[in-house]
Picture 1 (tube, one colour):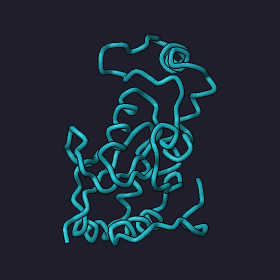
Picture 2 (spheres, one colour; picture 1 turned 90 degrees about the vertical axis):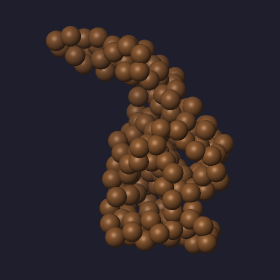
Picture 3 (cartoon, rainbow, N blue to C red; picture 1 turned 60 degrees about the horizontal axis):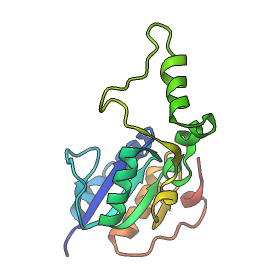
Amino acid sequence: MSKLRFASVWMGGCSGCHMSFLDLDEFLFDLADKVEVVYSPVADVKTYPENVDVCLVEGAIANRDNLELIHTIRRNTRVVAAFGDCAVTGNVTGMRNPLGGPEIVLDVAYRNGQVLRPQIPDDEGVVPPLVPKVSPVHVVVPVDLYIPGCPPSAKRIRAVLERVVAGQPVEMIGRDLLKFG
């Protein structure tokens, strides 16, 4: 049996979901026997590949880089999973939405919030251009699976991944698999 081609990405969020993923501890060894990691923030791969079986998408869509990458992921991936509350609902990342557009957000963060040298870092590549409104993943592309939690527990992540690698449907039923926060 060939290994599943596995990816994980980090969009607009805190990386807490990936930290929780690393809390899988010894199960990571079992998982390594069943998957080939083809893209992840913990691997040095620069371009999202084709023919990915499953991708865990952490974070909301907050900037143009996220927007471009999520379309590539959807095009090249069989199962896209919104991984954590930011990806599922926008959560903390989406708290910027009531402030207004990107210009206001940048002013609040970089001008109003600075005492010594208030300035917006506008050099190329420093801050990716923000999208007008932060969105959860499903607003931008179809999502096949939702893994709520801020972050999801290692137990929840394991329950999902065990079924995915076994080729079984994932049913998010019960408090342990559905609880937000």
